[in-house]
Length: 107
Image (tube, rainbow, N blue to C red; front, side, top):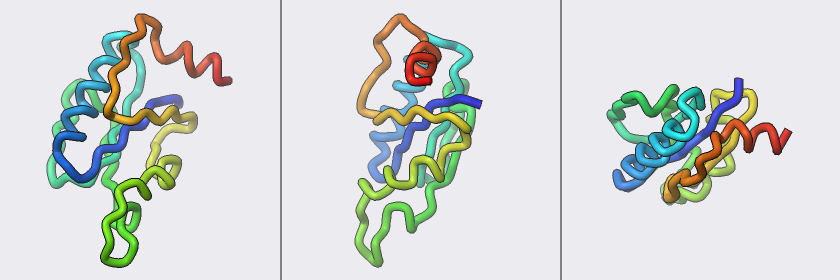
């Protein structure tokens, strides 16, 4: 199965950005599958996230040091999809084209 992976950890603002991006993806393509990898205690999947994935602490910690950028090296381990497009959550999908066309072009 193909899908999009979004990662939101740390500041709660990233969770809201992930929700906004997921909604914009689903407006362009209601059938797109969106997974959210996160480290929050509670997340409402709503109609915008198809899968919620808890990010393990070792994915963003080095010893006792927090290194949030490190989680991107785990993206394929965190993704529940066989084919994954990762998007940073600080964007919005403005294209009127469904993301499935991007999957097709990247084939």
